[in-house]
Length: 140
Image (tube, rainbow, N blue to C red; front, side, top):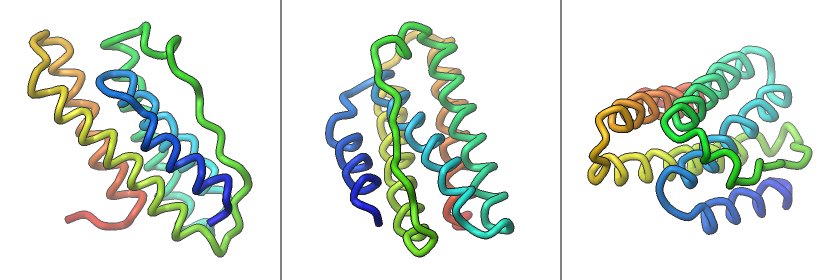
């Protein structure tokens, strides 16, 4: 994978923090990265990757609905150019970011006491799960 993508994914995974801001940061990165990936791969693959990006973006919307302030305290991710031959590695990196966001959401769901926030976390996790499946093609 190009050094910019590798560095961005590793930095995000390492520095994501905890809680709602971490979920937003990782989900936003997965959404932006998936959109970038979708225009790099062949059309048939790009369509499912685009749908994954939409799922990640819907998860991000849910985070913003539950905690509107979370977006102001985070920085948007920027991935560099991607070569078509690196798309498999890019897909794996994005899947790791989405999996980490899912882990953060599940951890937060164990301690969140606000019912509306619990419901939002449930929707976030559902979108992350379906986004990952569309991104990787693995439904099990």
